[in-house]
Amino acid sequence: MVGIKLNKIFFHRLFNNLVEFFRSDASRFLFPALFLVLVFYIIPVIISVYLSFTPLKNWNIDRYAGEIIGFENYYKFFYMLTHDPSVKAVFLTTIVFVALTLTVNVLGGLGLAIATYFMSEKAAGGTQLIWLLPRMTPIAVYSMIWYYFFHPSSIGTLNSILLHLGLIDKPIDFGQGIIPWGAWAIIVFVNGLVGVSYGMIVFTSAISNIPKELVIAARVDGASNWEITRRILIPLLKWHIIYVTTWQLLSLITTYDHLFLLVKWGLVNRDYGTTWSLYIYNTAFQLGETDQGLAAAAGVILVLVSSGLGLLTLKLMGFEKMIKPPRGDI
Amino acid sequence: MPGMRDVEIRSRSTELLIMCIVFMLSLPVITGYALIILSSFSRDMVTNLDPSAFKPTLTNWILLFHGRTALFAGIRVNIWGIVFNTLIVALGISLLVTITGALTGYAISRMNFHGRKHIMALLILLHAFPGSVLVVGVAFIYRLFMPSYTYVVYYSFFFVILARAAIEIPMATWLMKGFFDMIPWEIEWSAIVDGASRIRVWWKILLPLIKPGLAAVMLFGFLAGWMDLIYVRTFLAEPTLAVFIEYNVHAEYAYLPLVAAAGTLYLLPTILFFLFAQKLIFTISVSGIKG
Image (cartoon, rainbow over all chains, first blue to last red):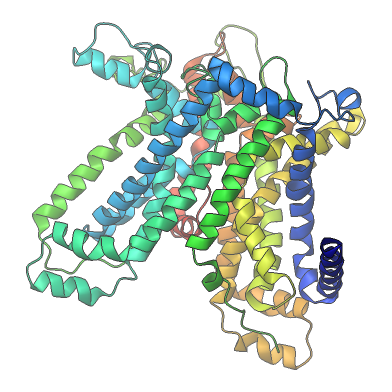
């Protein structure tokens, strides 16, 4: 009984808030964005959740979309997770991929930010531009570059370097032949390069906000670069390191576009080159008989994991501080 | 965004050492890009680092512009049509993201309304939402409203632009909010006291003041649309450069240096922005693109 009453009050307040919002000036500014976000973000998410309870296959909407089969897709996914070797591989790949790429991203970003700090302005700018390039490159071209770099024949750059150095006699198939670590190394490398720039940018702007006097005082006292890094820069960047780590963690769990072509072109093994996110996309759109119900169920579970981590991020980021009241209302 | 520099008394030799290390680490990236671009001007792929494989020629580019993807087979594609498709998607997304971002960014920077806090939380949460789950629902909507055969091409362009722009709205809003935050409130205050509406103030006073911000968001939206692979390959009825490369890199008949030329062509806007708009590149990257 209490629950119903509370619900009534809640909806009444929600309704009043909505009415007030639509009367306000602000709603006119927000309408286009809210409309797009509603139609292409929020409604699709609701549809995805709904589809996870239907047996939708091969996009046969007329035949399957109206049918509800309860949690069957979820049971199926958990069954596959424990019995199907390729889904097991995907799960393991996701964990390894996220953990390793996250380490590369955070430490690499930190390393680059600190290294450019000790450089002249021009060299620092050039370095930052080079490391921003992967992020701004069309995904298809970026994938193509690494496809040829790790190519399993002598046309591949890495193979030809190793051949010239005499370390190997014949080309190695890194992504398909050395399972799982060869495939994992490639996907971590390719995604790590994209992600490093995020940490680099955040840490660089954080370093530029550190009072110069601290570093000058340390220099006058004869501190080396290493001592300045360890005793001044890193302790003052602690908060930013936590922020970049959580943010990148979320991005890595959800990212799949930089992996798609590597798997499709066969550069890396299908099972050990696919992460959970890519598995969802491939199940819904790629593999011969597509199964949207199963993909949606795997997706809902991933959403639960990532939104839990997302809420944690908001807490860590000190969200209240970021949304301090606006200026400008009379 | 070169930040604060170290003080002048640092030693020159350690600086050189650090620069050498960073350069060594950057080598794979530089090599990878350089080899693809060089291959596009060579008769054979030069990705094996063999100087004798480099036989300079413009044939790849000439064939590409004639739309011939294979040396001997009679396969022809309309490459200019493909470039045009890519451009339409990128420009559409850029325009839409700029308009909505400028509107939303202003509201969040300057207005206190019911649910402001919730909308900001929503924007951050959406940014961290798994894209592959989203695509399944978006594809469902795509199929629900599919028009008759004659209009499918127009519909797919319209759909891709709207759907892809929606993904960039959270980031564009944050970017624009930052620019509006930098403008003193007093400038528009007098206009509002004189009885101008908020929309009028936004259009007449603020937009002209934040032209650099608008340029940054436009570039951000353009690159997002230009780079995209998943949305165009899933929804667009016509091929873009991304799809062209996807299907030609490991096609049996493909003439690889020609695909490298297509890749270089596709890379061109990125390179141009890096050469001529470095300041804008840093501006957009500060606010962060997902990755």
